[in-house]
Amino acid sequence: MVMLKWDEDTKRLFENGVDQGVLYLKKSDGTYDKGVAWNGLTKVSESPEGAESTAKYANNKKYLNLRSEERFKGQISAYTYPQEWNACQGKRAPMSTGGTPKALAGVTVSGQARSDFGLSYRTRIGNDTEGLDHGYILHLVYSASAGVSSKEYQTINESPDALEFSWDFDTVPTTVAGMKPTAHIEINSTLVDKTKLADLEKKLYGDESGEATLPKPEEVFTILGLTAG
Image 1 (spheres, one colour):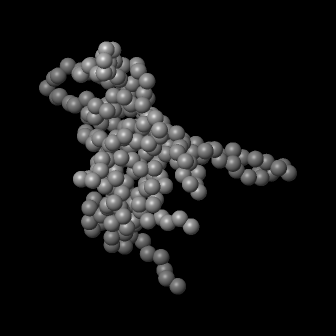
Image 2 (cartoon, rainbow, N blue to C red):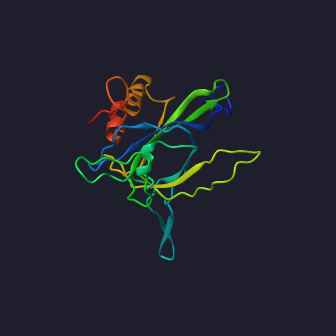
Image 3 (cartoon, one colour):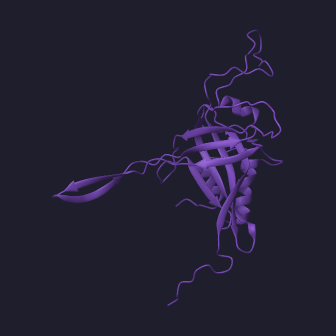
């Protein structure tokens, strides 16, 4: 028998930070367009809803609990955003009508149809000996859509500050073979095979042989070593 121990060296883990955000616009065929780096990303808040309990009674006593489906949603905050994000927040450029359609550069019109998107980002894992260099969790978000955002422009004064944008987002779960549909996958760099994780990151971030893209869940699992059968 082995007695449990608490707070051993290297086991005092914590999470902090967010970095390496990538935006992937969703195409009409359900796949994702090439990814673009999201500079100025300050926060991704995860606030799932659902999994609410409904009690059922029989024979004058509690019989069981039924839980509703869980839905992944949250909020994105940033000091700036890639131009591709305009399609996700309902801003479109006017298009020429004659010949080959061409967008009017530098002009956007609000209140247009919103594109769905995928997102990847990292949160750091720290411990008591390595700090935030211990590892990270890679987050993959599928079939998301952004809501409206408010902006408040103020006069520049003796305490200038940068305007921070924020958008609420909701998701539609995507099919996952052998599991319930989901819109969110987490990959822990301290637990998965390092070589396979590097292969996945080549897909997500691009390399000399291919553009950055968001693979479907089954492809993610295969890259990380899950085998059929």
